[in-house]
Image (tube, rainbow, N blue to C red; front, side, top):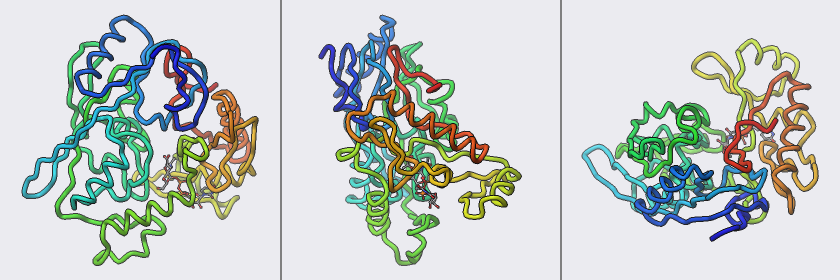
Length: 340
Ligand code: EPU
Protein backbone atom coordinates (compact mmCIF):
# COMPACT_ATOMS: atom_id res chain seq x y z
CA UNK A 1 0.00 0.00 0.00
CA UNK A 2 1.50 3.37 -0.93
CA UNK A 3 1.17 6.70 0.91
CA UNK A 4 -0.53 5.05 3.84
CA UNK A 5 -1.59 6.70 7.07
CA UNK A 6 0.28 5.30 10.06
CA UNK A 7 -2.39 6.42 12.54
CA UNK A 8 -3.85 2.91 13.01
CA UNK A 9 -0.34 1.50 13.46
CA UNK A 10 0.93 3.59 16.39
CA UNK A 11 -0.67 3.53 19.84
CA UNK A 12 -0.17 7.31 20.22
CA UNK A 13 -2.61 7.61 17.26
CA UNK A 14 -0.40 10.24 15.62
CA UNK A 15 -1.41 11.14 12.06
CA UNK A 16 1.69 10.71 9.86
CA UNK A 17 2.14 8.67 6.72
CA UNK A 18 4.72 6.43 5.10
CA UNK A 19 5.57 5.98 1.40
CA UNK A 20 4.77 2.29 1.53
CA UNK A 21 3.41 -0.16 4.09
CA UNK A 22 4.11 -3.87 3.82
CA UNK A 23 2.84 -6.57 6.13
CA UNK A 24 5.03 -9.62 6.74
CA UNK A 25 2.95 -12.66 7.64
CA UNK A 26 5.72 -15.23 7.39
CA UNK A 27 9.34 -15.37 8.40
CA UNK A 28 10.44 -15.68 4.76
CA UNK A 29 8.39 -12.65 3.73
CA UNK A 30 9.89 -10.62 6.55
CA UNK A 31 13.46 -11.53 5.64
CA UNK A 32 12.87 -10.96 1.94
CA UNK A 33 11.11 -7.59 2.39
CA UNK A 34 13.67 -6.26 4.84
CA UNK A 35 16.70 -7.23 2.77
CA UNK A 36 15.16 -5.85 -0.45
CA UNK A 37 14.57 -2.48 1.21
CA UNK A 38 17.95 -2.37 2.87
CA UNK A 39 19.81 -3.24 -0.33
CA UNK A 40 17.96 -0.52 -2.26
CA UNK A 41 19.09 1.85 0.49
CA UNK A 42 15.50 2.93 0.92
CA UNK A 43 14.57 4.12 4.44
CA UNK A 44 13.16 1.20 6.44
CA UNK A 45 11.13 1.17 9.60
CA UNK A 46 10.07 -2.12 11.12
CA UNK A 47 7.19 -2.05 13.55
CA UNK A 48 5.39 -4.53 15.76
CA UNK A 49 2.51 -3.17 17.82
CA UNK A 50 3.65 0.44 17.29
CA UNK A 51 3.43 0.96 21.04
CA UNK A 52 6.80 2.61 21.53
CA UNK A 53 6.87 5.13 18.69
CA UNK A 54 6.56 8.89 18.36
CA UNK A 55 6.04 9.84 14.71
CA UNK A 56 7.53 13.32 14.35
CA UNK A 57 7.24 13.55 10.57
CA UNK A 58 5.95 11.59 7.58
CA UNK A 59 8.24 8.63 7.01
CA UNK A 60 9.70 8.78 3.49
CA UNK A 61 10.33 5.08 3.15
CA UNK A 62 8.89 1.62 3.69
CA UNK A 63 7.30 0.45 6.91
CA UNK A 64 7.24 -3.29 7.44
CA UNK A 65 4.68 -4.43 9.97
CA UNK A 66 5.60 -7.75 11.48
CA UNK A 67 2.70 -10.15 11.86
CA UNK A 68 4.54 -13.45 11.93
CA UNK A 69 2.88 -16.00 14.22
CA UNK A 70 3.85 -19.20 16.02
CA UNK A 71 4.73 -20.50 19.46
CA UNK A 72 6.69 -23.75 19.64
CA UNK A 73 7.40 -25.50 22.91
CA UNK A 74 10.18 -27.96 23.72
CA UNK A 75 9.72 -29.62 27.09
CA UNK A 76 12.67 -30.83 29.13
CA UNK A 77 12.77 -32.23 32.68
CA UNK A 78 13.31 -28.79 34.18
CA UNK A 79 11.77 -26.26 31.86
CA UNK A 80 9.64 -25.32 28.88
CA UNK A 81 11.72 -23.80 26.10
CA UNK A 82 9.58 -21.59 23.87
CA UNK A 83 10.41 -20.36 20.38
CA UNK A 84 8.12 -17.44 19.64
CA UNK A 85 7.76 -15.56 16.35
CA UNK A 86 8.43 -11.82 16.55
CA UNK A 87 4.89 -10.84 15.48
CA UNK A 88 3.08 -12.60 18.33
CA UNK A 89 1.28 -10.14 20.60
CA UNK A 90 3.08 -10.07 23.97
CA UNK A 91 -0.04 -10.14 26.15
CA UNK A 92 -1.53 -12.99 24.07
CA UNK A 93 1.67 -14.95 24.73
CA UNK A 94 1.37 -14.30 28.48
CA UNK A 95 -2.28 -15.46 28.45
CA UNK A 96 -1.50 -18.51 26.32
CA UNK A 97 1.34 -19.71 28.57
CA UNK A 98 -0.91 -19.42 31.62
CA UNK A 99 -3.77 -21.24 29.84
CA UNK A 100 -1.49 -24.19 29.11
CA UNK A 101 -0.09 -24.16 32.67
CA UNK A 102 3.35 -22.76 31.93
CA UNK A 103 3.61 -19.92 34.46
CA UNK A 104 6.44 -17.38 34.59
CA UNK A 105 5.26 -14.43 32.50
CA UNK A 106 2.32 -13.34 34.71
CA UNK A 107 4.06 -10.21 36.08
CA UNK A 108 4.48 -8.97 32.51
CA UNK A 109 0.75 -9.08 31.69
CA UNK A 110 -0.90 -6.35 29.59
CA UNK A 111 2.34 -4.82 28.29
CA UNK A 112 1.42 -3.56 24.83
CA UNK A 113 3.43 -4.55 21.78
CA UNK A 114 4.86 -7.66 20.20
CA UNK A 115 7.30 -10.36 21.27
CA UNK A 116 9.92 -9.12 18.80
CA UNK A 117 9.91 -5.68 20.43
CA UNK A 118 10.31 -7.08 23.95
CA UNK A 119 14.11 -7.56 23.85
CA UNK A 120 14.83 -4.14 22.33
CA UNK A 121 13.99 -2.17 25.43
CA UNK A 122 14.01 -5.18 27.78
CA UNK A 123 10.37 -4.67 28.80
CA UNK A 124 9.72 -4.90 32.50
CA UNK A 125 7.06 -4.42 35.13
CA UNK A 126 6.08 -5.46 38.65
CA UNK A 127 9.42 -6.97 39.62
CA UNK A 128 10.22 -8.86 36.44
CA UNK A 129 12.04 -8.01 33.21
CA UNK A 130 12.15 -9.74 29.85
CA UNK A 131 15.82 -10.63 30.46
CA UNK A 132 14.77 -12.85 33.41
CA UNK A 133 13.06 -15.28 31.02
CA UNK A 134 15.03 -14.75 27.81
CA UNK A 135 17.18 -17.62 26.56
CA UNK A 136 18.17 -16.24 23.15
CA UNK A 137 17.18 -13.77 20.44
CA UNK A 138 17.39 -14.50 16.71
CA UNK A 139 17.85 -11.51 14.40
CA UNK A 140 18.42 -10.73 10.75
CA UNK A 141 21.71 -8.90 10.30
CA UNK A 142 20.91 -6.36 7.58
CA UNK A 143 24.53 -5.82 6.51
CA UNK A 144 25.34 -9.49 5.90
CA UNK A 145 21.83 -10.89 5.32
CA UNK A 146 22.64 -13.62 7.87
CA UNK A 147 20.41 -14.90 10.64
CA UNK A 148 22.24 -14.66 13.97
CA UNK A 149 21.28 -16.01 17.38
CA UNK A 150 22.48 -14.18 20.49
CA UNK A 151 22.40 -15.69 23.95
CA UNK A 152 20.66 -13.63 26.63
CA UNK A 153 24.07 -12.58 27.92
CA UNK A 154 25.19 -11.40 24.49
CA UNK A 155 22.06 -9.21 24.28
CA UNK A 156 23.60 -6.95 26.98
CA UNK A 157 20.28 -6.40 28.70
CA UNK A 158 20.02 -3.53 31.13
CA UNK A 159 17.19 -1.36 32.49
CA UNK A 160 15.10 -0.56 29.37
CA UNK A 161 18.17 -1.22 27.25
CA UNK A 162 19.90 -3.89 25.13
CA UNK A 163 22.40 -4.33 22.31
CA UNK A 164 19.48 -3.68 19.92
CA UNK A 165 19.31 -0.07 21.12
CA UNK A 166 23.10 0.25 21.08
CA UNK A 167 25.51 -1.24 18.54
CA UNK A 168 22.82 -3.13 16.61
CA UNK A 169 20.49 -0.13 16.38
CA UNK A 170 19.13 0.09 12.80
CA UNK A 171 21.18 -2.98 11.81
CA UNK A 172 19.07 -5.84 13.13
CA UNK A 173 15.53 -7.11 12.79
CA UNK A 174 14.39 -9.49 15.47
CA UNK A 175 12.87 -12.58 13.90
CA UNK A 176 12.17 -14.87 16.86
CA UNK A 177 12.80 -15.10 20.56
CA UNK A 178 13.64 -17.98 22.89
CA UNK A 179 11.99 -17.96 26.30
CA UNK A 180 12.70 -20.38 29.13
CA UNK A 181 10.01 -21.01 31.75
CA UNK A 182 11.28 -23.07 34.68
CA UNK A 183 8.93 -25.85 35.80
CA UNK A 184 9.88 -25.07 39.38
CA UNK A 185 7.89 -21.84 39.32
CA UNK A 186 8.75 -19.11 41.82
CA UNK A 187 6.28 -16.26 42.25
CA UNK A 188 7.80 -12.76 42.13
CA UNK A 189 5.95 -10.73 44.74
CA UNK A 190 8.34 -7.87 45.58
CA UNK A 191 6.30 -5.11 43.99
CA UNK A 192 3.78 -3.08 46.07
CA UNK A 193 0.32 -4.66 45.72
CA UNK A 194 1.77 -8.13 45.01
CA UNK A 195 3.37 -8.20 48.46
CA UNK A 196 -0.03 -9.00 49.98
CA UNK A 197 0.02 -12.51 48.46
CA UNK A 198 1.33 -15.52 50.40
CA UNK A 199 4.31 -17.03 48.53
CA UNK A 200 3.33 -20.58 49.49
CA UNK A 201 -0.29 -20.27 48.34
CA UNK A 202 -0.39 -17.84 45.44
CA UNK A 203 -1.22 -19.01 41.92
CA UNK A 204 0.16 -17.42 38.76
CA UNK A 205 -3.38 -16.49 37.66
CA UNK A 206 -3.84 -14.39 40.80
CA UNK A 207 -0.66 -12.44 40.03
CA UNK A 208 -1.84 -12.03 36.43
CA UNK A 209 -5.24 -10.69 37.57
CA UNK A 210 -3.65 -8.33 40.09
CA UNK A 211 -1.16 -6.94 37.56
CA UNK A 212 -3.94 -6.45 34.98
CA UNK A 213 -6.02 -4.62 37.56
CA UNK A 214 -3.19 -2.33 38.73
CA UNK A 215 -2.08 -1.54 35.19
CA UNK A 216 -5.62 -0.76 34.02
CA UNK A 217 -6.16 1.57 36.97
CA UNK A 218 -3.03 3.66 36.30
CA UNK A 219 -2.16 3.35 32.63
CA UNK A 220 -4.49 4.64 29.93
CA UNK A 221 -5.85 2.20 27.36
CA UNK A 222 -4.42 3.31 23.98
CA UNK A 223 -7.79 2.53 22.37
CA UNK A 224 -9.31 5.32 24.46
CA UNK A 225 -6.37 7.72 24.93
CA UNK A 226 -3.32 7.49 22.67
CA UNK A 227 -0.06 6.86 24.55
CA UNK A 228 3.19 4.88 24.48
CA UNK A 229 3.31 3.70 28.11
CA UNK A 230 6.03 5.28 30.22
CA UNK A 231 7.41 8.17 28.18
CA UNK A 232 10.43 8.67 30.43
CA UNK A 233 12.86 6.22 31.99
CA UNK A 234 13.38 6.24 35.73
CA UNK A 235 16.73 8.06 36.05
CA UNK A 236 19.61 6.39 37.86
CA UNK A 237 21.72 8.63 40.09
CA UNK A 238 24.69 8.25 42.43
CA UNK A 239 23.80 7.52 46.08
CA UNK A 240 25.14 10.93 47.17
CA UNK A 241 22.81 12.72 44.74
CA UNK A 242 19.86 10.71 46.06
CA UNK A 243 20.71 11.49 49.72
CA UNK A 244 20.94 15.19 49.00
CA UNK A 245 17.58 15.13 47.18
CA UNK A 246 16.00 13.08 49.99
CA UNK A 247 17.23 15.66 52.51
CA UNK A 248 15.43 18.41 50.58
CA UNK A 249 12.39 16.39 49.46
CA UNK A 250 11.57 13.82 52.10
CA UNK A 251 8.84 11.99 50.12
CA UNK A 252 11.03 11.37 47.06
CA UNK A 253 10.81 7.75 45.80
CA UNK A 254 14.04 5.87 45.01
CA UNK A 255 15.07 2.21 44.76
CA UNK A 256 18.61 1.17 45.73
CA UNK A 257 20.37 -0.80 42.98
CA UNK A 258 22.94 -3.56 43.57
CA UNK A 259 25.77 -1.29 42.41
CA UNK A 260 25.00 1.30 45.11
CA UNK A 261 23.31 3.78 42.79
CA UNK A 262 19.63 4.71 43.16
CA UNK A 263 16.83 4.57 40.58
CA UNK A 264 14.48 7.50 41.09
CA UNK A 265 10.76 7.34 40.28
CA UNK A 266 10.47 9.78 37.37
CA UNK A 267 6.69 9.86 37.93
CA UNK A 268 7.32 11.32 41.39
CA UNK A 269 9.76 13.93 40.01
CA UNK A 270 7.31 15.01 37.30
CA UNK A 271 4.36 15.15 39.68
CA UNK A 272 6.35 17.13 42.26
CA UNK A 273 7.57 19.54 39.62
CA UNK A 274 3.86 20.38 39.37
CA UNK A 275 3.41 18.91 35.90
CA UNK A 276 0.73 16.25 36.40
CA UNK A 277 -2.21 17.06 34.13
CA UNK A 278 -0.21 19.74 32.22
CA UNK A 279 -1.36 20.28 28.61
CA UNK A 280 0.56 21.63 25.65
CA UNK A 281 -1.51 21.69 22.48
CA UNK A 282 -3.26 18.34 22.34
CA UNK A 283 -0.56 16.55 24.33
CA UNK A 284 -0.93 16.08 28.09
CA UNK A 285 0.67 14.53 31.14
CA UNK A 286 -1.63 11.73 32.27
CA UNK A 287 -3.57 12.60 35.41
CA UNK A 288 -3.15 9.17 37.02
CA UNK A 289 0.50 8.48 36.14
CA UNK A 290 2.86 11.35 35.40
CA UNK A 291 5.30 9.13 33.48
CA UNK A 292 2.82 8.82 30.65
CA UNK A 293 2.22 11.42 27.94
CA UNK A 294 -1.21 11.14 26.33
CA UNK A 295 -2.72 12.29 23.06
CA UNK A 296 -5.80 14.23 24.12
CA UNK A 297 -7.11 14.24 20.54
CA UNK A 298 -5.28 15.13 17.35
CA UNK A 299 -1.83 15.66 18.92
CA UNK A 300 1.10 15.68 16.51
CA UNK A 301 4.47 14.13 17.26
CA UNK A 302 5.81 17.68 17.55
CA UNK A 303 3.20 18.50 20.24
CA UNK A 304 4.32 15.44 22.17
CA UNK A 305 8.01 16.29 21.75
CA UNK A 306 7.39 19.90 22.85
CA UNK A 307 5.66 18.69 26.02
CA UNK A 308 8.46 16.19 26.68
CA UNK A 309 11.05 18.97 26.38
CA UNK A 310 9.06 21.13 28.80
CA UNK A 311 8.97 18.23 31.29
CA UNK A 312 12.70 17.54 30.96
CA UNK A 313 13.64 21.21 31.47
CA UNK A 314 11.23 21.75 34.39
CA UNK A 315 12.35 18.61 36.23
CA UNK A 316 16.02 19.45 35.65
CA UNK A 317 15.47 22.97 36.92
CA UNK A 318 13.78 21.78 40.11
CA UNK A 319 15.75 18.61 40.95
CA UNK A 320 18.96 18.82 38.89
CA UNK A 321 18.14 15.43 37.33
CA UNK A 322 17.88 15.02 33.57
CA UNK A 323 15.17 12.66 32.34
CA UNK A 324 15.64 10.49 29.27
CA UNK A 325 12.82 9.44 27.02
CA UNK A 326 11.79 5.84 26.41
CA UNK A 327 10.01 5.61 23.01
CA UNK A 328 11.68 5.66 19.60
CA UNK A 329 11.44 8.91 17.64
CA UNK A 330 10.71 8.59 13.92
CA UNK A 331 11.57 11.38 11.47
CA UNK A 332 11.52 11.54 7.62
CA UNK A 333 14.34 9.07 7.07
CA UNK A 334 14.22 6.87 10.13
CA UNK A 335 14.70 6.69 13.86
CA UNK A 336 16.51 9.66 15.38
CA UNK A 337 18.38 9.71 18.66
CA UNK A 338 17.18 12.87 20.34
CA UNK A 339 14.24 15.26 20.52
CA UNK A 340 16.57 18.28 20.85
N1 EPU B 1 4.70 8.14 41.34
C1 EPU B 1 4.27 9.40 41.68
N2 EPU B 1 3.54 10.10 40.79
C2 EPU B 1 3.20 9.58 39.58
C3 EPU B 1 3.64 8.28 39.22
C4 EPU B 1 4.39 7.59 40.13
O1 EPU B 1 4.57 9.91 42.76
O2 EPU B 1 2.50 10.27 38.83
C5 EPU B 1 5.44 7.36 42.33
C6 EPU B 1 4.52 6.23 42.85
O3 EPU B 1 3.79 6.64 43.94
C7 EPU B 1 5.50 5.16 43.22
C8 EPU B 1 6.65 5.38 42.27
O4 EPU B 1 6.50 6.68 41.70
O5 EPU B 1 5.96 5.33 44.53
C9 EPU B 1 6.70 4.35 41.16
O6 EPU B 1 5.49 4.37 40.42
P1 EPU B 1 4.93 3.05 39.72
O7 EPU B 1 4.95 1.92 40.65
O8 EPU B 1 3.63 3.40 39.08
O9 EPU B 1 6.00 2.67 38.64
P2 EPU B 1 6.87 3.57 37.69
O10 EPU B 1 8.26 3.64 38.20
O11 EPU B 1 6.15 4.84 37.48
C10 EPU B 1 7.70 1.57 36.20
C11 EPU B 1 7.77 1.23 34.75
C12 EPU B 1 6.40 0.81 34.21
C13 EPU B 1 5.95 -0.39 35.02
C14 EPU B 1 5.91 -0.02 36.50
C15 EPU B 1 5.57 -1.18 37.41
C16 EPU B 1 9.57 2.57 33.83
C17 EPU B 1 9.94 3.75 33.00
N3 EPU B 1 8.27 2.37 34.00
O12 EPU B 1 6.84 2.72 36.34
O13 EPU B 1 6.59 0.42 32.86
O14 EPU B 1 4.67 -0.83 34.59
O15 EPU B 1 7.21 0.47 36.94
O16 EPU B 1 6.65 -2.06 37.50
O17 EPU B 1 10.45 1.87 34.33
C18 EPU B 1 6.46 1.17 30.59
O18 EPU B 1 7.69 1.02 30.51
O19 EPU B 1 5.79 1.58 29.60
C19 EPU B 1 5.78 0.94 31.86
C20 EPU B 1 4.50 1.22 32.03
